[in-house]
Image 1 (cartoon, helix red, strand yellow):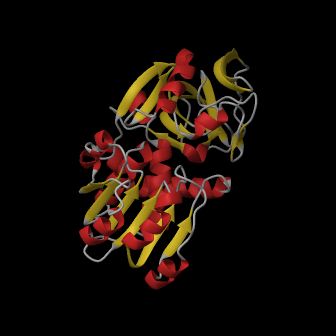
Image 2 (cartoon, rainbow, N blue to C red):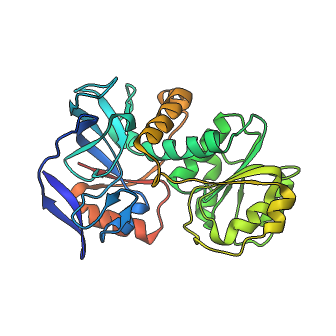
Length: 321
């Protein structure tokens, strides 16, 4: 089969053996795959948790039709139309654990469906499970213009947030945030943004989902309400910075770090189960959606990565197979 492979020189297209599903896995004939920021590092063999490395098939989410299933697979079967998270997505065929598989509702095509798995898993866990969002609370999403950020705002709005704040340093992207649930869009290059968020929320923001960290970390605590929660999902703006322990203590903030890289298979299955049980009906009725910025054929995966690196897109970049 054809696949996009990580090499010391970067992404290369090669013919590789078709994968065989293990007892807990499904084999999917891929119709569409999506790009994510982590794919950039993996192109040259960087590992992302348990996946990646030189010679690995790239990609982390895909959609298509199940061709076969392993003996332990539950609730899904050959012929089902699905969208999945899992390694090795940029290929004619891919395998993944059955717990990462979502059956598609009628009318949802593969290109739109492939934008959803990672955003739904990541942000339902961050906003609802780890963030403990309550109806009537104010929420701020740092890095809201990314696919997962746009999904976080929509989930927060659907779960009853009274105020949703999204941040982006790009004026063009900020202008679109209200289309995906933001009541207020802030620019974190403006030094007043922590106070603006605090005042907009009335007495501070109860839940902050942070995909930036680094330079916004202490500003988050200024923006937070007393007894607020900050869920650290991403660190694209820096993995280290000075930490204001006094602000943290005065506000009595719950500061929670999350990543899928150290989660067990059973933990990921449970995260996926909780997401489907709670919000999959919002996918089915079209409430939760993500914009598609551009599509590329699989053969042009290297060009798609270059387009992502240029950082001018809004929404998801999709490969069609």
